[in-house]
Amino acid sequence: MVVTWVVALGLIVFAQVATRNMKAIPEGAQNFWEWMVESLHNFLDGIIGHHLVHKTFWFFATIFIFILFSNWVGLIPGFGTVGWGHQTEHGFEVQDPLFRGANADLNMTLAMALIFFLCWIVWAFQEVGPIGFLLHLFAPKGDTTGFLKVLMVVVFFAVGCLEIV
Image (cartoon, rainbow, N blue to C red; front, side, top):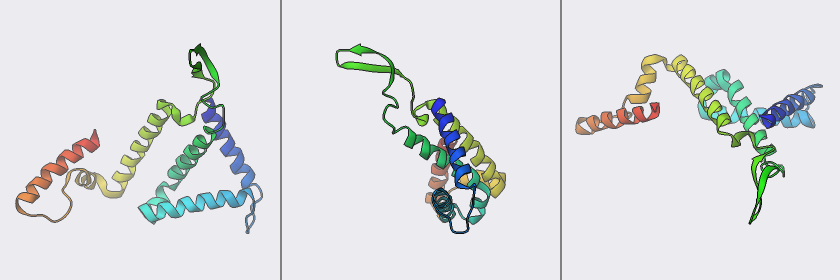
């Protein structure tokens, strides 16, 4: 939790410093920040389209930047290797590290996954409605006829059930 707060505080401070004196031709920290945000925007625009990027960019950019910097901070020497433990025949074994990477904890990854899942359901319902949502999950894709159509209905229904689970 400490690492999470340190990373979040560091990102807030860095964003404030980078955007304090905005210039038309960016340099230094402003240049890096604008490059990162614009690259993410263009990347997502190519994947999910302009309409959805306009609606969801705030979430995807925030989570991506937070996870990226959390993982980078976890690479600093001492993370996960300095802490409390005991001596073994193979040397000192750390059982309770003083600092761990933010994403090394299952609680953090589970919380992020659940929040994204909730947002995805809301955005999907807004975009295609409840019928379109159910059709996307359970309806067969493509043009098939006869026995293959029946087989595809069964397969895609099973796949939809798996996606829900």
